[in-house]
Image (cartoon, rainbow, N blue to C red; front, top):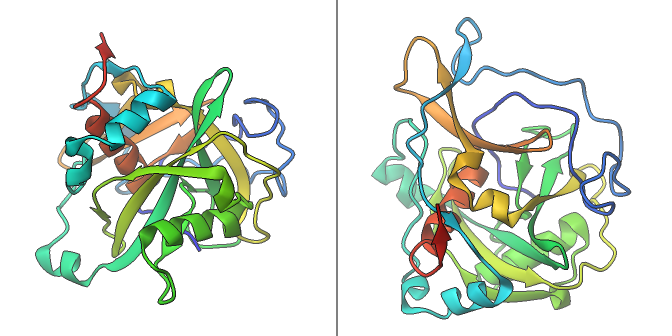
Length: 265
Protein backbone atom coordinates (compact mmCIF):
# COMPACT_ATOMS: atom_id res chain seq x y z
CA UNK A 1 0.00 0.00 0.00
CA UNK A 2 1.24 3.48 -0.86
CA UNK A 3 0.92 6.75 1.01
CA UNK A 4 -1.60 8.95 -0.79
CA UNK A 5 -0.68 12.27 -2.40
CA UNK A 6 -2.55 15.54 -2.48
CA UNK A 7 -1.40 18.01 -5.15
CA UNK A 8 -1.85 17.44 -8.88
CA UNK A 9 0.08 18.92 -11.77
CA UNK A 10 0.10 18.45 -15.57
CA UNK A 11 1.24 14.95 -16.52
CA UNK A 12 3.01 13.79 -19.66
CA UNK A 13 3.30 10.33 -21.16
CA UNK A 14 7.03 10.55 -22.03
CA UNK A 15 8.85 9.10 -19.04
CA UNK A 16 12.38 7.96 -18.15
CA UNK A 17 12.08 4.44 -16.77
CA UNK A 18 13.96 1.67 -15.02
CA UNK A 19 15.50 -1.19 -16.98
CA UNK A 20 16.58 0.49 -20.17
CA UNK A 21 18.30 3.50 -18.72
CA UNK A 22 15.77 6.37 -18.98
CA UNK A 23 14.48 4.94 -22.26
CA UNK A 24 10.99 5.44 -23.67
CA UNK A 25 10.01 1.83 -22.95
CA UNK A 26 10.03 -0.01 -19.63
CA UNK A 27 10.10 -3.79 -19.18
CA UNK A 28 8.26 -3.23 -15.88
CA UNK A 29 5.38 -1.29 -17.37
CA UNK A 30 2.04 -3.12 -17.13
CA UNK A 31 -0.02 -1.12 -19.62
CA UNK A 32 0.03 1.95 -21.78
CA UNK A 33 -0.32 5.27 -19.90
CA UNK A 34 -3.67 7.05 -19.83
CA UNK A 35 -4.02 10.15 -22.04
CA UNK A 36 -2.14 13.16 -20.65
CA UNK A 37 -4.24 14.91 -18.00
CA UNK A 38 -3.86 18.64 -17.37
CA UNK A 39 -5.04 19.20 -13.81
CA UNK A 40 -5.30 22.69 -12.34
CA UNK A 41 -4.07 22.89 -8.74
CA UNK A 42 -6.73 25.19 -7.39
CA UNK A 43 -9.87 25.51 -9.49
CA UNK A 44 -10.42 24.53 -13.15
CA UNK A 45 -11.84 27.96 -13.94
CA UNK A 46 -8.45 29.59 -13.23
CA UNK A 47 -5.24 29.29 -15.21
CA UNK A 48 -2.41 27.31 -13.57
CA UNK A 49 1.05 28.74 -14.19
CA UNK A 50 4.62 28.50 -12.90
CA UNK A 51 5.38 31.22 -10.34
CA UNK A 52 8.63 32.65 -8.97
CA UNK A 53 10.17 29.94 -6.78
CA UNK A 54 11.38 30.72 -3.26
CA UNK A 55 13.33 27.44 -3.11
CA UNK A 56 16.86 28.51 -3.98
CA UNK A 57 19.94 26.61 -2.80
CA UNK A 58 23.40 25.73 -4.07
CA UNK A 59 23.58 22.41 -5.90
CA UNK A 60 24.63 19.50 -3.66
CA UNK A 61 27.34 17.13 -4.89
CA UNK A 62 26.62 13.72 -3.34
CA UNK A 63 28.18 10.28 -3.60
CA UNK A 64 27.40 6.98 -1.90
CA UNK A 65 30.28 7.57 0.54
CA UNK A 66 29.22 11.15 1.33
CA UNK A 67 25.65 10.01 2.03
CA UNK A 68 26.87 7.32 4.43
CA UNK A 69 29.03 9.93 6.16
CA UNK A 70 26.12 12.36 6.39
CA UNK A 71 23.78 9.88 8.08
CA UNK A 72 26.50 8.97 10.57
CA UNK A 73 26.74 12.63 11.60
CA UNK A 74 25.29 14.26 14.69
CA UNK A 75 23.19 16.49 12.45
CA UNK A 76 21.47 13.56 10.73
CA UNK A 77 20.78 11.77 14.01
CA UNK A 78 18.69 14.77 15.15
CA UNK A 79 16.01 13.86 12.57
CA UNK A 80 14.35 17.24 12.57
CA UNK A 81 10.77 17.18 11.19
CA UNK A 82 10.63 17.97 7.50
CA UNK A 83 8.95 21.24 6.65
CA UNK A 84 6.09 21.70 4.22
CA UNK A 85 7.55 23.84 1.39
CA UNK A 86 4.23 24.37 -0.40
CA UNK A 87 2.31 27.63 -0.20
CA UNK A 88 -0.76 26.28 1.56
CA UNK A 89 -2.34 26.14 5.03
CA UNK A 90 -0.23 24.29 7.60
CA UNK A 91 -1.29 20.99 9.14
CA UNK A 92 -2.91 21.70 12.52
CA UNK A 93 -1.64 20.43 15.87
CA UNK A 94 -4.69 18.17 16.12
CA UNK A 95 -4.00 16.73 12.68
CA UNK A 96 -0.40 16.04 13.68
CA UNK A 97 -1.45 14.23 16.84
CA UNK A 98 -3.99 12.09 14.99
CA UNK A 99 -1.89 11.35 11.89
CA UNK A 100 -1.53 7.71 10.86
CA UNK A 101 2.06 6.40 11.13
CA UNK A 102 3.55 5.49 7.76
CA UNK A 103 6.97 5.01 6.23
CA UNK A 104 8.56 5.25 2.80
CA UNK A 105 11.84 3.98 1.44
CA UNK A 106 14.01 6.48 -0.41
CA UNK A 107 15.98 3.97 -2.51
CA UNK A 108 19.19 5.46 -3.92
CA UNK A 109 20.44 3.26 -6.74
CA UNK A 110 24.22 3.16 -7.18
CA UNK A 111 24.99 3.00 -10.91
CA UNK A 112 28.22 3.44 -12.85
CA UNK A 113 26.63 6.50 -14.47
CA UNK A 114 25.71 8.06 -11.12
CA UNK A 115 23.17 7.84 -8.30
CA UNK A 116 19.43 7.74 -8.97
CA UNK A 117 16.23 7.74 -6.91
CA UNK A 118 13.83 4.84 -7.45
CA UNK A 119 10.16 5.82 -7.61
CA UNK A 120 6.85 4.25 -8.53
CA UNK A 121 3.81 5.46 -10.44
CA UNK A 122 0.48 4.49 -8.85
CA UNK A 123 -1.70 2.18 -10.88
CA UNK A 124 -4.52 3.72 -12.90
CA UNK A 125 -7.19 1.67 -11.06
CA UNK A 126 -6.42 2.93 -7.55
CA UNK A 127 -6.86 6.27 -5.80
CA UNK A 128 -4.55 9.09 -6.87
CA UNK A 129 -3.91 7.22 -10.10
CA UNK A 130 -0.74 8.19 -11.92
CA UNK A 131 0.92 9.91 -8.98
CA UNK A 132 4.61 9.22 -8.55
CA UNK A 133 5.91 8.40 -5.08
CA UNK A 134 8.45 6.45 -3.05
CA UNK A 135 7.58 2.87 -2.12
CA UNK A 136 5.84 2.89 1.23
CA UNK A 137 2.65 2.72 3.26
CA UNK A 138 1.08 2.47 6.70
CA UNK A 139 3.00 0.98 9.59
CA UNK A 140 1.37 -2.40 10.24
CA UNK A 141 0.80 -3.57 13.84
CA UNK A 142 3.30 -6.38 13.32
CA UNK A 143 6.09 -4.09 12.07
CA UNK A 144 8.96 -3.50 14.48
CA UNK A 145 9.29 0.08 13.25
CA UNK A 146 9.39 2.34 10.19
CA UNK A 147 12.50 0.67 8.74
CA UNK A 148 10.73 -2.68 8.57
CA UNK A 149 7.64 -0.99 7.10
CA UNK A 150 9.65 0.75 4.38
CA UNK A 151 11.56 -2.39 3.41
CA UNK A 152 8.42 -4.55 3.46
CA UNK A 153 6.46 -2.14 1.30
CA UNK A 154 9.29 -1.79 -1.23
CA UNK A 155 9.43 -5.58 -1.51
CA UNK A 156 5.65 -5.84 -1.90
CA UNK A 157 5.41 -3.02 -4.46
CA UNK A 158 8.42 -3.61 -6.71
CA UNK A 159 9.99 -6.87 -5.47
CA UNK A 160 13.07 -5.04 -4.17
CA UNK A 161 14.73 -7.51 -1.82
CA UNK A 162 15.47 -6.10 1.66
CA UNK A 163 18.81 -7.91 1.42
CA UNK A 164 19.74 -5.58 -1.45
CA UNK A 165 19.08 -2.41 0.56
CA UNK A 166 21.76 -0.91 2.77
CA UNK A 167 19.80 1.28 5.19
CA UNK A 168 22.07 4.25 5.89
CA UNK A 169 19.74 6.54 7.81
CA UNK A 170 16.35 8.12 8.38
CA UNK A 171 14.88 11.59 7.97
CA UNK A 172 12.53 13.43 10.28
CA UNK A 173 8.80 12.87 9.88
CA UNK A 174 6.64 14.66 7.33
CA UNK A 175 2.95 15.09 8.21
CA UNK A 176 0.72 15.31 5.15
CA UNK A 177 -2.69 16.91 4.70
CA UNK A 178 -3.97 13.44 3.78
CA UNK A 179 -3.49 12.40 7.41
CA UNK A 180 -0.20 10.48 7.42
CA UNK A 181 2.91 10.92 9.56
CA UNK A 182 5.46 9.74 7.01
CA UNK A 183 8.86 8.54 8.17
CA UNK A 184 11.41 8.44 5.30
CA UNK A 185 14.05 5.69 5.43
CA UNK A 186 17.11 6.17 3.20
CA UNK A 187 18.83 3.17 1.66
CA UNK A 188 21.57 2.50 -0.90
CA UNK A 189 20.83 -0.13 -3.54
CA UNK A 190 23.93 -1.48 -5.25
CA UNK A 191 22.12 -4.45 -6.81
CA UNK A 192 18.51 -4.01 -7.90
CA UNK A 193 17.90 -7.63 -8.74
CA UNK A 194 14.81 -8.39 -10.82
CA UNK A 195 12.14 -5.79 -10.11
CA UNK A 196 8.44 -6.45 -10.69
CA UNK A 197 5.62 -3.92 -10.39
CA UNK A 198 2.85 -5.15 -8.06
CA UNK A 199 -0.28 -6.10 -10.00
CA UNK A 200 -3.02 -3.49 -9.64
CA UNK A 201 -0.93 -1.22 -7.43
CA UNK A 202 2.15 -0.05 -9.34
CA UNK A 203 1.83 1.14 -12.93
CA UNK A 204 5.55 1.48 -13.53
CA UNK A 205 8.95 1.87 -11.90
CA UNK A 206 11.03 4.98 -12.60
CA UNK A 207 14.37 6.55 -11.71
CA UNK A 208 15.29 10.22 -11.30
CA UNK A 209 19.01 11.20 -11.38
CA UNK A 210 20.01 12.29 -7.88
CA UNK A 211 21.99 15.25 -9.23
CA UNK A 212 18.74 16.51 -10.79
CA UNK A 213 16.94 16.19 -7.44
CA UNK A 214 19.76 18.02 -5.62
CA UNK A 215 19.60 21.03 -7.95
CA UNK A 216 17.11 23.66 -6.76
CA UNK A 217 16.54 24.92 -10.32
CA UNK A 218 14.80 21.58 -11.01
CA UNK A 219 11.89 22.54 -8.75
CA UNK A 220 8.96 24.59 -10.03
CA UNK A 221 6.27 26.40 -8.06
CA UNK A 222 2.81 25.98 -9.59
CA UNK A 223 -0.08 28.27 -8.76
CA UNK A 224 -2.87 30.31 -10.30
CA UNK A 225 -2.86 33.61 -12.14
CA UNK A 226 -5.28 35.19 -9.67
CA UNK A 227 -3.41 34.53 -6.40
CA UNK A 228 0.01 33.34 -5.18
CA UNK A 229 -1.39 32.57 -1.72
CA UNK A 230 -1.77 28.89 -2.64
CA UNK A 231 0.86 27.19 -4.81
CA UNK A 232 2.63 23.85 -4.90
CA UNK A 233 6.07 22.63 -5.88
CA UNK A 234 6.78 19.89 -8.37
CA UNK A 235 9.83 18.42 -10.09
CA UNK A 236 9.89 16.91 -13.57
CA UNK A 237 12.26 14.66 -15.44
CA UNK A 238 11.70 13.45 -19.00
CA UNK A 239 7.95 14.03 -18.67
CA UNK A 240 7.55 12.35 -15.28
CA UNK A 241 6.24 14.76 -12.63
CA UNK A 242 6.53 14.40 -8.86
CA UNK A 243 4.35 16.54 -6.58
CA UNK A 244 2.63 16.50 -3.19
CA UNK A 245 4.30 14.95 -0.11
CA UNK A 246 6.85 13.12 -2.28
CA UNK A 247 8.36 16.31 -3.66
CA UNK A 248 8.26 17.75 -0.12
CA UNK A 249 10.37 14.83 1.10
CA UNK A 250 12.76 15.24 -1.83
CA UNK A 251 13.20 18.90 -0.93
CA UNK A 252 13.62 18.05 2.76
CA UNK A 253 16.26 15.44 1.90
CA UNK A 254 18.05 18.07 -0.20
CA UNK A 255 17.97 20.64 2.61
CA UNK A 256 19.32 18.09 5.11
CA UNK A 257 22.30 17.30 2.87
CA UNK A 258 23.14 21.01 2.59
CA UNK A 259 24.40 20.89 6.20
CA UNK A 260 27.20 18.41 5.46
CA UNK A 261 27.87 18.35 1.73
CA UNK A 262 30.00 20.30 -0.68
CA UNK A 263 27.96 22.54 -2.96
CA UNK A 264 28.37 24.34 -6.25
CA UNK A 265 26.67 27.43 -7.65
